Amino acid sequence: MLKSNVIGIDLAKSILQICQISRHGELISNKAVNRQKLKELLATVKLAWLIQLRERLGINRACIALANKTVRTAWAMLRNETKYQ
Image (cartoon, rainbow, N blue to C red; front, side, top):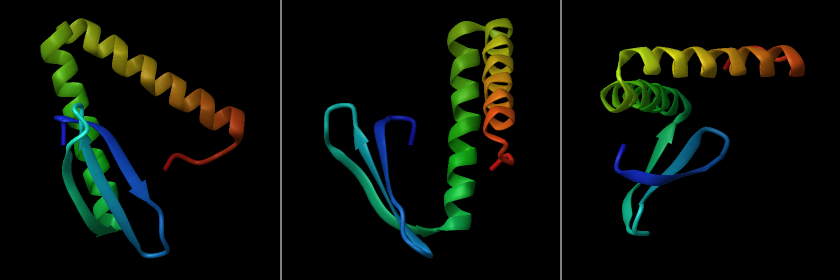
């Protein structure tokens, strides 16, 4: 998943189509998943993002980036009066 640059999600009622495209425009995968599997997949991507960031920038900068992302998410939730998804 981390080698892809674009992830396309076709929203449907119960089954979602996920398409991954590489940075060079080549199709990596195209599969149908249910909503629960999509949540698990996106959580894995978020964790992988943090691990890559820590390896690239170091633990201190990764902590600052994560705090920044968390605060921006909280601010958007408060501004739009929405719950965390």
